[in-house]
Amino acid sequence: MKLFEFNEKDVITSELLLEDLDQLQSLVQDPSFATFGLPQKRGVVNYTKDKGNNISANDLRNQFITFQLSNKKDGPAILESSEVISTIDGSTNQPDVLVNLEMQSFHIGNDVNVDKNTRATMRINIGKDESSTDKYFDTAFWSIAAGLDLYNKAQNKPADPKDLKADFKQAFGNRPIEIPGGLAKMTFEVVKHREPKWWQRIFKFLQSDTGKTLTSTIGFPAITNNAINLLDELLNKLDKSDPEILFKSRPLRLALSEKAKSDYTGGNERIKMGSLSPGFCVLARGKDFNTFINSNAFYYPAYGKLVPSNVSNADLVTGNYEDPFKNVTYSIFRIGMKEHKLDPTFNYGN
Image (cartoon, rainbow, N blue to C red):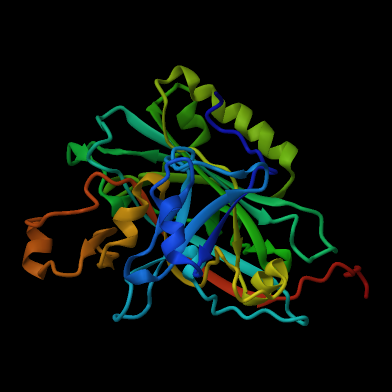
């Protein structure tokens, strides 16, 4: 099995089901379906793929899924993406969406073995979904490759989540990611490994007053699937470095505006699909779905991690509390979005 492989046609969509919840409980209990119940009878989330329609809970174990941190103190703290109502409306005049991504932190679960030689390579692709109503622009992807040094040699311990961060806008030369039509698909893959000799030449870590920067990124804006495959050929050389897959991803379909969601579902109000809104989101694995959806937590940027809401400041500083996320590997992203109209008819001199 290849470590990094972009199967752009093998897309997963999350759907929020609100009808016949009692009957759906049989699917929630059946491991042959990737179906999960939400607390407080908020509904049932079902994950399907375009090819073959059904996937199992085991298929979703290492697949990344997205959650949105609520911006309200009351109600659920963490929403599954299909519960999200985007604050980007979208319109005929501005149907496209510009996106900026910033990885705020990367939390490695305590169950992942990390020593001084442990590294990780991350790869993210995001671009227009072929189901988008946009017919003007060819499908292109914005691809990011990142090197993570998971061990802090100065402190002689695994790196803190807050140290593993990167502003991907800088990797793209301060250009925003362009999503024509506002319907996106995204992949997120992370492989833990030993450091091969060529790795530092690709990911050149900068020096700072506090020591080495722990994250190095390179960005490839608006490239084709063939170009991504060339990048994957390079990254797949990690197969001789004792690799361990933390996240293995099919593309996940996400609506970035309410217009994109309505266009995809045909305006059917009974169909709720995965969406993202400006703010903070969590990328986590399917096997940890229940940990996130049943939690009442706050995100502390100073620590780069999620903390249960009942933890006092004193216990937070000392670490003297039971952490439900201690064995969970997840990443926190800050997302900026803006509706836009891309111009396919632009000509120089006009």
